[in-house]
Image (cartoon, rainbow, N blue to C red):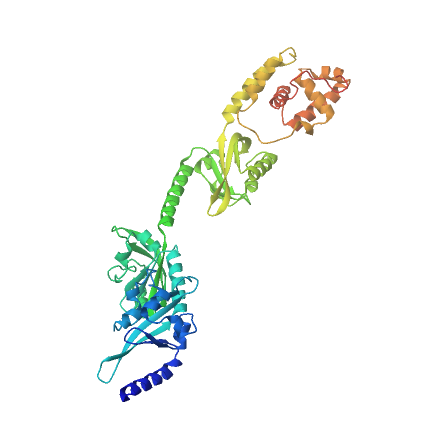
Length: 498
């Protein structure tokens, strides 16, 4: 064996001993592309235990392992790092994903560089592939990439060394209208996301220092020349061992538009509230404290503002019938709204006014309130009562009036609007029901006394009790009350006479 060959073999053994324990993977090749040797780290990075499992040469290696770039594009066989170094190329930082052919479940990511060893004459003697296993780093980067792209909040990342954007997510592109290539590689001077920030000087200083940029409102320039209201913040991070700044944004435009619409709606409501000729009152739903009334309310009921604002409905005591007040708010609490309920209201000077009350539950400043609209129907009521009174005069002791006429009287008396629930027919005693039924037949007290075999005074007491319970003041009103509820539509017979 010649001295040169011996020296070469000695050098190779020494080289193998040096690199055998390295954590970097090392593969040695002959100039004819034959795989000469590989250390344990290189075998582990390929998921094999024997050097022969790597293949005899570069071509055999390409049949045993499939390589992909980080963008998932396949690496052509003649561009495999082992094929490139076999051609004598030198390169560094080539990132490839290595997958055993036919076994997609296993893969590794290698950062590969090459060396060409020369002899004393400077001629190529051996070829070397050196690889780092960066699988964990690549996996973490892939997770970050997926999270970054999936994040609905618009975001960009710029490299602090040159202030160029290196990543942008779909949320930012969709919000601003830019294309990806209009952002990637652009500097923060060309696309300044902090230009419209409320504290631009602080934000720029923190960017230069690589420090956290606190949240602040800003106007972000759009691709069409417009701008958008946003909240911007900056968070320093390291990406690929480089200091970077992650800018994230909250699109405030929908909220801004909603606030404008709400403000306009509130202004319209306030104007309608103030200018309405109908008395309107707003009170809290839980405590019935008056929050606001319009001028029509103060004018109609003659109350000064200081006796109304901040006081409860009960303290003001302008609803004449306390029972009606209780039923009104109980019904509101249950159904959330009312439509034209008859309520008698007392003015400051004591005058009683008949009102048709409509109410609804509204949210004001995140609190539930009741909005009450009180329509003065005193004149209408007076007209109706005058008509009924005239009919009653004619009907006195005129039991011969037909039921049809009584029904028409009921229709005249009946207000077209619903009323609050009051006493029911079942609240009357059996005897009181008998008396009411005979009243509806048109019988006078003496006739009722004969029919029921009672004293006339006893009948009068029963009639008075019925009036009180039904909140009526005459026989005709009692008849109307019964007809409105569909009572005694057939011929009435008291108990014991049926």
